Image (tube, each protein chain N blue to C red):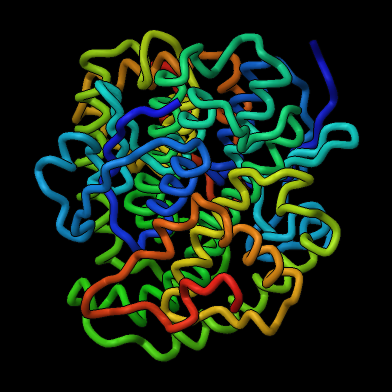
Length: 224
Length: 224
């Protein structure tokens, strides 16, 4: 099923990437409208009073907050499913979505991508080297945690790809844009990322290119 | 249906309060184990590697992250429902849950309850008066936003009480413990809070009492 949708987007927002990956998995065509999220326009504030992106507009329906959007898309377009069937398995997916959206994002993404690139883009000054160092240290902890999971599961939440993988890949792909993931630290994680990176839903993300801030050379390589 | 559950809890955690309210609405008996969340024990880390509470143990099942727990409970114990029937209505509930858990919490609760009480309890020094002032200002914005919603809806997400109300009440009740909500600013908000406060599920929350940090005098009054 194909339906035109509009996503208010910023290419290096992991939360927008979650939604873009879900739209891709569901094979929904989207029109992406790039917004400067640090200067929310009146249009965005009308659609989402929090001023945050992503915001999805689909016909008359407007949905905001990445998790609300992803669950909505999975409910309305159930194929292929990105949530498992049992409540306890869904709880595990949602626990991990919370892990990546909240813990990983605040401990790693904000300290690395935020300090090293987004500050520059949004005119908030120079990176704080202590935060960058903390981000690196936290990133190692998170890689080890993901490795521990992936050593016993095919995908992060179980046998099938789910919103947990989407949330994790959204964060990691933003870090990978600026070459901030040490893929040598974990073969299991590298294999998992190669698997998700090669999916058709990932292509738009791999072709993201901010003019004055191009991606790391290996960013779009499926063999990295 | 009644089933014994154990909740790893801290009385003034809004995220634990979300879960306690849902357990109460579902009339599930819980054993609450109070934990010092700022010093996660080995037991907590075994149950939830993020070290965060709430964690719910129910028989053999362990669920972490408040939103994962609340959605799990609503799926397994559907009566009374705390999520509406249509995907778009559920998306609105989840948008608001994100609003209160993320935006309200970081803009208001952290700056008020966090600075004025939790810093003291967890031994992290004196309140930062600039943050407290910012918290007050942000709180007015949030009260006005909730008022705008409640002027056209019976409950925050629509005609029925939902997880959106639970998330909002969880944050506000923590602030009310230290008398940080200006109920005179909004009659609609006061009426909504009086309605939710008088529910049986709220009683355990109204009897919370930290020995050296007692609640504000009006905290448990249904007529405030």
